[in-house]
Each structure stands twice: as C-alpha cells, then as structure tokens.
Image (cartoon, rainbow, N blue to C red; front, side, top):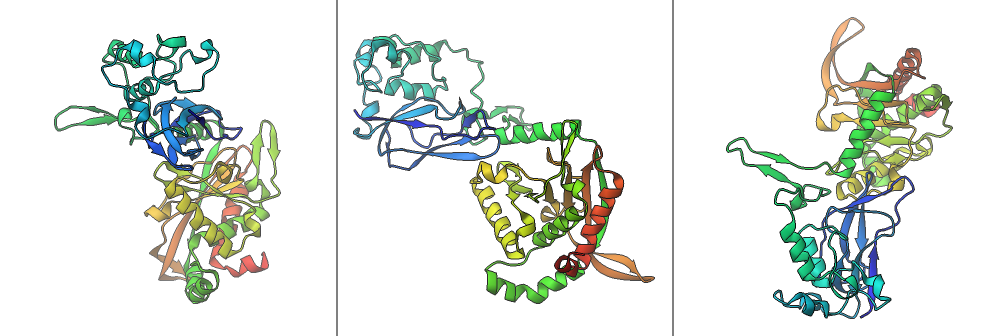
Length: 413
C-alpha cells in the first residue's frame, strides 16, 4: 500500500477548531485527486477538503459532526488500491480473521498501531456514529476490528444522543418528536449560527447601544441611476445599485465624524485611519459580513462588483476567513427583504452600524405642499460609551445630505 493522509486545512489564528460536516465519499470508494471529500465548518466560513491524491478511501478517521483542528488527519487514501477492496472482508468474519486483513497504514512499531481502525471497522464506526478513539482495539498491536466496533455499538445505550452535526442536512443531527398533528424537530445550531448568537449577546451586553433615525428622499439617487445606468453597465459590465451610494455616503460621513469609525479597546479609543466597511449578507448558513477594504478608495463600479462577488460566494459558502476579518463600520440592508424599519445591532468591536430599508413612495411635505416621494428610513445604532448623540445624529444627517444631493460626494462637501 501507498498511504496518503487527508488533513484539515490550516485554520486562521482566531479559529481553534472546526466541525466536520458530511462525508461525500465512503470507505472503499475511488477518489480523484483534488476531488472534494468533505466540507468543514468554522464559526466564520466553510472550507472544502480535497483529496491530496487519487486512489481508494480506506479509512475515515473522524466521522460526520466531529471536532477537528488545523492539520489533523481525518482520513487515509491508498493510492494503489482498487475501489471496493477496502471493504471486501465478509461481514461474518471472526475478529481474528479480520485482524489479519491489510492494515490502514504502513507497518511501524507495534505500539504505534494501537487504536488504528481497520478499513471495514472504520466504516462501521462512521455508520454507528462512533468517534475515533472511542473503541478499544483487540486486534494485532491494538488495532480496532469490526468485532470491536460491533461490540461497542451493541453496548451503546439506546437513548444516547447522536453526535452533534454541523448542519440540518446531516441526518443524525435532527430529532423529530411524534406529536401527531403538532410535530417538533430539534436541530443543533451550526457553528456559524452559534457564533453569531454569541457575538450578538456580546454586543448587547458590552455596548451601550442607542439608535438614531432619519429619512431620506431617494429621488436624486434614482434619477442619477436612471440617467447613467445604460452607459455605466456598458462601460463596467455591472449595474448601478443602491448599495454603492450607501457605502459612499457612509464613508463621506465617517470622514467628517471619525468617532463613528472608531472602536473601543479596554479604556482606549482606537481611531482608524482607513475605512473598511462590512456589508451584511444573508446566506444559507446565516448572516455573514464580508469587508470592503479601503472603501474610500473604491469606485462605484468596484463597490458594485465586489458586493456582487460577496453575494455569490455567500450563497455558495465560499467566503474566505480573510474576507470577513476586520471592519471598522458596517451596513445592513434589510430593505432587500422588504424591511421598513429596524434597529441594527453593532458588530463588535465596531462602534456603529447603518441600517437601510425598503424605498417606498410616501406622502411628504415640501414647501407647504403634500407631494409623493420615494423615501427610505435610515437607522444608525451606535455605542454611546464613546459616541455622543450629537456626533451620531450629525453623522446620519451627513449621510442623508449626501444621498439627497449626490454631487456632494464628488466635491467632498
């Protein structure tokens, strides 16, 4: 045999562990080089684990739902094996006979094989949701055999809960209660959802959050978009959206009121001399906030292209850790889903967040006359520990003024 180990990719320094999702292959299956074997979920992103070499999958070291760390071995591939060979041993074979089957790793010192599962045993462990290392081996040099796994599975309490899985798609993770016409299903949180919950509670408990509101007439922005949409799309290959205007208006206000772009570190206030704007994006896994780096230096076209890229990656679960790390200010667009008003929660360690909503025609008063205008309600939540009401209100007014008169963005006034 020529054995190749499949390892967890290197995780970032801020991520201690990840959760195994669902294996796409089973023991005995042929795999191609770079074929994705499993996805692993951290509290920020989902990472794909490809096969380092072509061959046959002979061992799954960690089952679905297992917790793993950087560079941990999670499977082994025999680069010279044939599909099905790893599970060719008959199910009724005695433990002693199974122990004589080929081992899952190169021969070494006898005590180095203790706890290593035979290929067929590894498959049974995965089928019975038994974690690696949980079954004592009685085979040669302490290796785990099929008989060991069958014995452990039989001794397992019937009411024992299944291992926590990463997402509802892992069958073992969901538990349904038969309540007739009132069924219930219990599904564990994904790592991302649990992390979001943790950070939201952290934000609520550590920040003195207040929210200020204002309304903005979006007619000037809509007129500008209509006038230049065709030429813009032809030139840049992307349409002008509202978000690029909101980003530009936010940066315009942050420059005027730097405290809105600051963060708290103990008893210190950190003023950031750059503008990294987080854009809240919904995904099948939950809310993610990728970052527009140096947003003040980006053109409208660059912002639109980057936001479209973020949306696509979020939908496919392909956002990288580096794309969601950092940020000095955030924007949440509930209007995408029809929200009329909300109070966004600050994304720690940031100190402010802008919430934008659906633009709707409303009756407003202008020069003593009732007229119809496309209005959008803006909401900015801020940390009152370092941001006074004056700066928060004037900052939001600066955003409103920039949107109602976009020429201000050109002349920086």
